[in-house]
Amino acid sequence: MSEERFDRMEKMMAQLIQMVGHNNAVTEELRQDVSGLKEDVAGLKLDVGGLQEDVAGLKLDVGGLKEDVAGLKLDVGGLKEDVAGLKLDLAALEAKMEKGFADIVSMVNVLGEKVDKIAATQAHHSDLLDVLAVRTTHQEAEIQGLKRAI
Image (tube, rainbow, N blue to C red; front, top):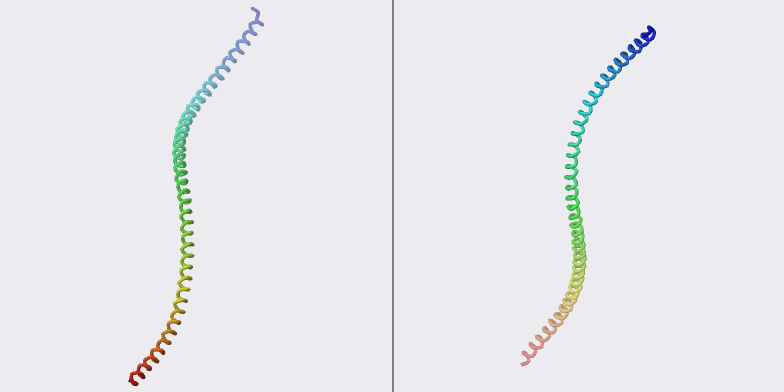
């Protein structure tokens, strides 16, 4: 082999050794990066596991809230029915009160008319009693006169 060829081979070997060294350094750096990534992935897996537990807890809470809302809807429906019934009862009571008030007014009017009739009848009876008293007095006087004549 010629010297020149040998120098070229030596340079190529040196370059090859440099490249292998560089590749080894890059490989080691990649190993460290992969190791870091594995640690990060393990941390993320733990975080995801915690989040999954949180989501499961939230799902349970939402299920409980849905049940509570359904119960509240039933309660509100019952209350609406109760209010509607109370409104009907109130309307019936108002109608009865109006009728009762009208009946009382009618009774007061009838009683007023009867009181007026009683007052008129009393006045008439008073006049009749006065007339009867005068007649009785005259009759007694006539009886006395007849008794004296006898």
